[in-house]
Length: 180
Image 1 (tube, rainbow, N blue to C red):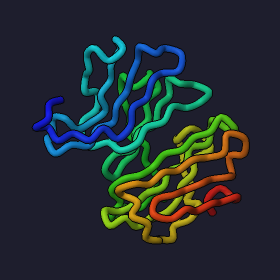
Image 2: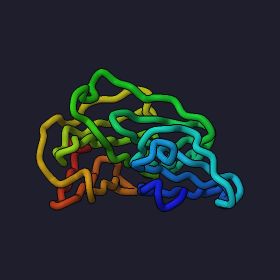
Image 3: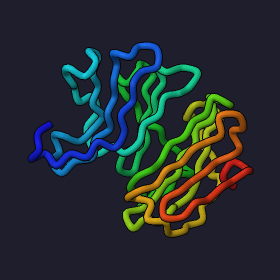
């Protein structure tokens, strides 16, 4: 990247068992800078392995070759440490207005994946959960609330109990029932 790309690196991951593999999710003004960038040589060189603005990424705690990524209106999953990606779809996801999402997984149940969608106004559009590493999804809730979520928000799942979530941005929220 160079300064004129106006790139914002949203998330950086280091593979937990192969630390020479690095992943970076990038949102940028210049379309060539956007995407998921991957390095296999400790960051000396980088390759854009999936284009478009990306926002969040997480490794599956039981299988770090499985990686989840969120993008502008869609979700991705890799099963080969980020070398290639496939789209995760569901009829329960919002179809209008979603712009970005946060992803959370937990060693407490590594098959469970949470996604929280927001729109470009910072309104949360709902919490979605997969019990099978992102193959199928259910809507935990679909109510909307405003939280400035696009700019500075975070989500985490308890490392012990996959039903306990913390979500925060401008305000902090807690769920003990899987985001319902």
